[in-house]
Length: 309
Image (cartoon, rainbow, N blue to C red; front, side, top):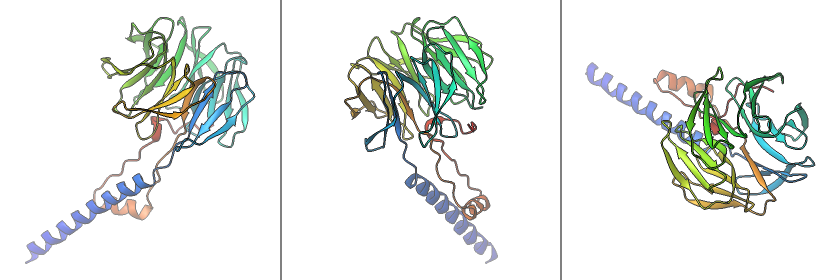
């Protein structure tokens, strides 16, 4: 009788733990926060637009000449490169603008590493610059040919789209460079999906290519008109800024294409807000710990959360 009672209690406890774990997953999925999309325009005066998930458009910033590269810090501040001023600006979530860096020459790519350092592709000098959180600049790489898109993979390796050479370069944390892919037609933008596959906007061919972590290439989309920027939302959908048509296209993971926004003057950059799923109550976490459960918190957009400026 004692053995049977223990078995019944054990089964009930396991079922309860499983139900709680499932409930938490469903709760987290249901409460997953929406991500707004930010779009820069390479036109005099911009503007820099913000879109809600349903496509509602508003002006987030304006008045600067030729907005281009964008990246969100872990603290939720938007950093944007502006061509004619040679500067990188910092925009708070409330829209307050300050100058982060000056004296640059063609800010076409921005990306944060996991330590909160900002990397910039300086197209006209052929350099990659690294900025600490305090704005101190150093040269990370040089001798490039029109460096444009930058993206970090999940393990912190930097990839760079080198438009002039038609290559994608890969960098170690110390700056050692190797060629990841070659033979491209003006690679302009890079983005990683959650599985670690690299997507590349091929400006000259009008294609979007997908590369496995091992470098095997396939065509994800074609027939585009100067694709200039790529970004994934938290649900795994790929967004593309189509410079030539003035559209923002959305692609499902299987490549189904739809128009998210249209009528833009010259869309050239895309960035999604950082979002973190809500943390369950401490009592729930305690119950999961007792049951041997585990909770995974997904950081939307694969962006870092350590940068505090």
